[in-house]
Image (cartoon, rainbow, N blue to C red; front, side, top):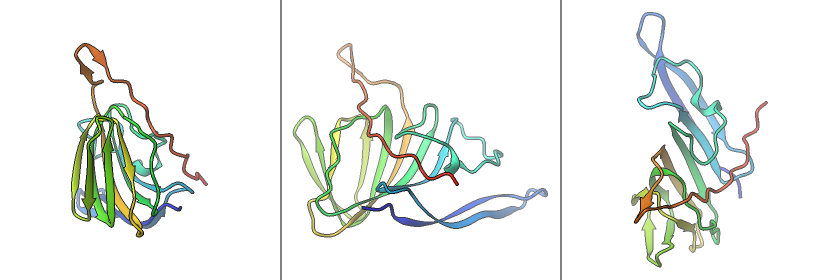
Length: 164
């Protein structure tokens, strides 16, 4: 399984304040199934920061910020059950995906479907015979407490990107 190649266009401003393209490139993550496209380390975001948000070292989430990545799941791929301390938007771009929750519910997703995930313990599975491509935006969240019990994260460990 390899990360998808994604064309990434980043905008910014020149010294006169006019809008410009600062980056137009194709990115591909390391040997993992995700390509990191951008991160922020604050909210609200500082759009005057000149650093490339995709060069920031992050885990599955980023405390106080956001993470945007696109993942490709090969047929038969099944993630471990996991929970992150985040609010996640998942958008199925291509193929079919299954979302399983630890409460036993299962939802079949098709291209164009969107999941708003609110700190839930879940599995992603591609039970089809075609690859599935999904965009994920993860935003740091407060720890979730239900009936006085903190629901602890069980994050997926993602490999570090190559840093040449």
